[in-house]
Length: 274
Image 1: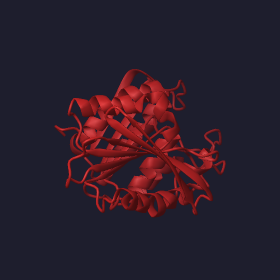
Image 2 (image 1 turned 120 degrees about the horizontal axis):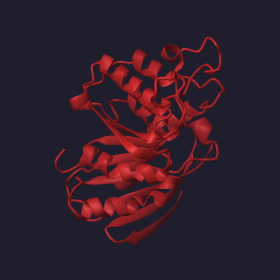
Image 3 (image 1 turned 180 degrees about the horizontal axis):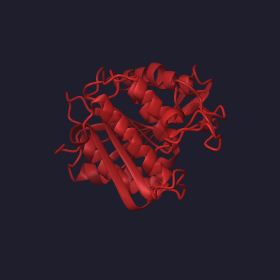
Image 4 (image 1 turned 90 degrees about the vertical axis):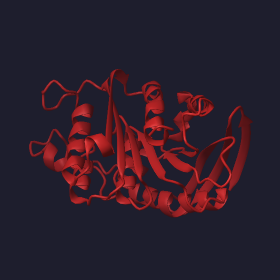
C-alpha cells in the first residue's frame, strides 16, 4: 500500500493505492477529509465512483465552500478511481448486460464491501460511521446504486448522476426487446425487498442525450430514471421522504453538469438542515 498526503486549505487529501485481491489490481482511492472534525463525533462516509474525475469537477473546492460556510455535517469522502476495465467492473452484480459488460461487477462489489470498507475503518480508526453513502456518475452511478441496494445494512444513501439505467439484458434492436423486462436495474429493484431507511438521490439533464426509443418526446435517460423511481415507489419508498429527483434544464452528460448538481446532493444527504 502506497500513500501520499497533501494539505491544502480546509481539506486534507490522502492518496492511497490499495492492492485488491478481488480485482487483481491496485486501486487508487483519494480520501478527502475536512479539517476540524469534532473529536468524539462519528462523521458520515461517502464513497464515490469514478474518483479520477473529481479534480476536473473541482470537488475539493465544492467541499471547502460547503464546509467553510458550515453547511455540511462532518463527512469523509473516498473517491475511488476506475481501472482500465471500468465497463467490466461497473454494472449490476446479478448479471452482465447483453454484450457481457459488467462481468466483473460481483468482484467490484466484493472489493467495496469486503476490502475497501474494512480498510477505511482500520485506517481512520473509526469503528462506525454515522451513515454511509455511495454515489456515482453514468455507469458509475448504476454501480453505486446496485451496491447500495444490495447492501442496505451498510449503505443508507445512494446518489446517481445521469445513471446508466438503460443497462439491458437484450439489445434494444431485437424485436423481442421490452423495456419492462430487459432493463436490468429495474428488474433488480423489482425482485428486491424494501429496506427501511434507504434514501435515493437522482439527477438527470435534459441534454443528457437525444435518444428517445419509445418516441414519447422524453429522452431515454430521463425516462429510464423516472421508471426506476416508479419501481422504488412500488416497493414502498416515498418521493417526499425517501427519493429526490433533480432535473437540470440545461444539464449535459458531463462532469461540469454533475459538479453543478453535487452541492445539491451533498446538502440533501448531509446538510446541516437536512
